Image (cartoon, rainbow over all chains, first blue to last red; front, side, top):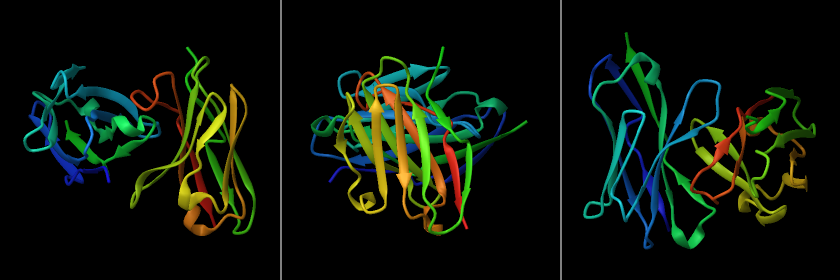
Length: 113
Length: 113
């Protein structure tokens, strides 16, 4: 079945550091790959979407890219700020089950001032 | 701009009690989702409605969990009877584009003693 693996449980950085979070996925379909961010006390909110057509998404200084060859997709940001501290989830929507989102376990980003 | 509203924000229940969680989706959204979030399991889909029709009843959650959509602007999730393992954050989400862009509420944090 479809699956998403997000191995980095926690990442601690200082302000202005480079952020890179990796996810791998498995599916037999043409997926839409998503990144959600969850701030404390809130529900997740969509940060970026990447499709197999466009390979890349950009929003709020974050960039998501996808590599079909290695079935992986990454979230990166050149210079993190303390306000970016949150949990980041990668997710997959397989086109055969367009209502079902497969979420990764999340990466807790802690940015030190 | 009204997002997804969930009540209550916190709920404490004794084992064996019946609890009802409430959700008001974004106006005009046809898709409504209930998720359970825990540190161990992450985000798990409990139920999915499309235009008020139940499309997914959560498989393993069918036994004691029942979601209903009484009208297009109100949904409930009933847990009966509650067990300590049900302690989690319950999230409601709505969408006008299936699973590709979910709008989540703040969640209800349930503690079962």
